[in-house]
Length: 230
Image (cartoon, rainbow, N blue to C red; front, side, top):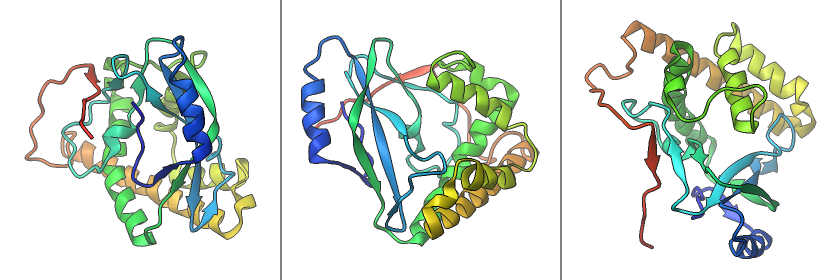
């Protein structure tokens, strides 16, 4: 199974590499590296490259991690951005996948407004320890996903996150080397972090839900990858 968003492109070189990779019997999944384009420019710095995503895997082996965000409405396609868990061996492909959104800035802002609903719930779960009920733990000495989870649990407790996110992207991770596009992208990430913070505050004020009429139902700790027909 190959997971590709509508604004992502598989190059001919990557297709050829995938064709060879899926013949290997010893690997159950592969990470693909994304090149993110913004305002027509590749965002090479700011921590946006490399950007590894586990997108190619044997269907029977893959499971989505459950981050306990099901009751949050209007989140867009964030569910497919949850981590896919592969119990077997995984590897990394060399060729890049392109992330190119040809729509205007209105759609970028509208999409991230929806994404921030989901992120706020993830932040709340990290703060409350509910994420520990999931399937990927936080471990500084674990794999890349576990290390990222460990650092995120620290991040959600920091003050001034919108300001820190801009500093991290633009200065520490050299986002300024991407010129005007890098500056705008950094400012938007800072704004996005502020939106998450506001919605996190709202969740806490209203008992952990952005929609007071939404019901919570028990969910499993992982979900099978749905089979679809093309």
